[in-house]
Image 1 (cartoon, rainbow, N blue to C red):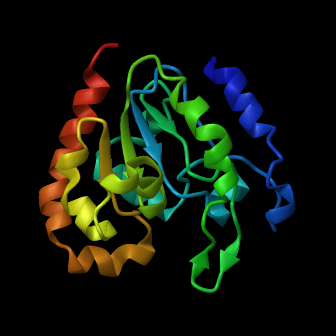
Image 2 (cartoon, helix red, strand yellow):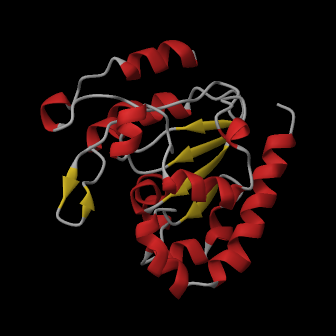
Length: 195
């Protein structure tokens, strides 16, 4: 299935409309040529309003982690952005609600089958890791991230770059020193490979 008609289908999706307190606005970008695919959780309220994926503090940090420019980040020949839930799910007691499960059930397989060459898939956060890694996940997200080499070269596992995770990042200082250099190396290698 070609990427553009698929994106059009996704953007027209109303599957969860009755469950979304802020309405439907699928936020997704990719092309058949995307070399790195970012699978996060779901858009937050700011991204819901702008329609631009990772257009928030989490996105700023993610681009710092990757050491890529904003221009490169939004170049679909380089990066595909495919969250577990395409629409903002609303807010719960302790932050945003989980991504609606209907999105991944309906769309993830067709999207992942779109790419001409197998991309490096960045699995950001527990929802993406649970969906893609299944029983291969470790007991906790921290253990999964610590074991990142086990999932290469197909997947690179990461915590969410949200400011809400500042405490996790402080408690796990090895992440910045051990994981980020490897992340940057793998991403740059994939971006510079010809298909």
